[in-house]
Length: 115
Length: 112
Image 1: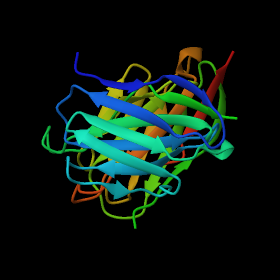
Image 2: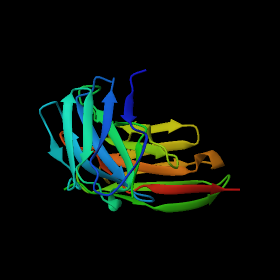
Image 3: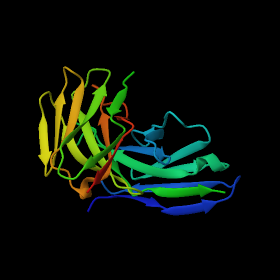
């Protein structure tokens, strides 16, 4: 099945460390997104990319960077992790060409803990 | 700027009862999506509503879209415990060239 995968699924790191979360998809979608979810809260958009050469900031991009290595891969980096970046991170994909609408498909999530 | 408001944010309901979750949005759109999230899990697509008057049903859940009122509803019929989850609505811009805007989610707890 075409899918959205995220690695790692769980990560514990220390303050100040650089870490990378990876997202791969086999859906053939052009658009990819990174979201953060804190306990009991909704989704907040970190970065999004509508094609390989397109990168856009979301509402909470400070402290994060991204790389779109290929159509199928979109990585999120925390240059110097801090405890308030402890959260559940989701990657998502969509493609306006598929049916002409923008339904997003989510990966399983990465649970990140920064000590 | 497109804003999406869901209510209620928390809902505790008894098994067998009916209830409705509301999703209001601030600017013109004719594309709206409902997602379900179980605790600690990912978001799963429930319904895609693509026009005024669209209605979709799956089991005990029914979603509808009124683009003139800028309102979608998710109606739960005869709730069962398995429906306990958080439900998000998300609205697309007219152009489709911006990310979806999500509501804050409604955490539903169905109790015996």
